[in-house]
Length: 256
Image 1 (tube, rainbow, N blue to C red):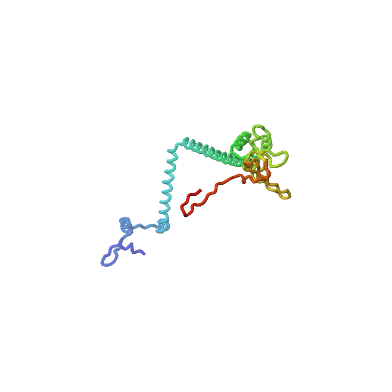
Image 2: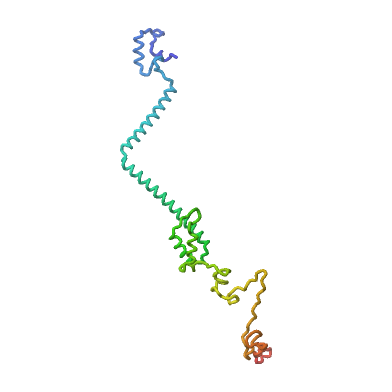
């Protein structure tokens, strides 16, 4: 344990020399590698504790360096410029957020308008729809959930308005299907059985409609078919004459 002290004493005749305390102190002070402390004074620290403390102090030093750099950056910063930039970004955020909310609200309103106009009996065709939609949007009805407040009364007025009523399918006061175009897209009022119409359909309990008799043009003799004007019962096809055609024979004769 005390081996490190032996080098402080010289040997005389093979035995350590005797020296005074003053000489011992001088020799200790002269050895720069030798450190002697009094444990009662707290001058000794175990190696592992010393290493831990060195590491801790190194970390603290780095923290101090970082803090000093941050403090210096604040000193170099234009505080008024930072405040102005922060305010501009806040205003931009609020504006962009409000624009997004307005866009979503407009999309929802347009969607609900289209759904509502699907229920009011518009005639087929984009022309009618756009005409009514423009008038509808101009009213700016309040949208309560999925319902436009006051819209039903407005549409009822449009259906009576001479400028708008033709955009709607009018109800037939005598019952029936109203003034919708009839079969095959023919003009309203076209009688059943007219060319281009669909044959009438018999509903349960109704009598089967009679099919019209076919009409034939009158023959050359003035007689028509049964049921036609001037019909005399004569077959009109009897007045047609055809020249006989004989097939070519093997004898090479001339066809007549």
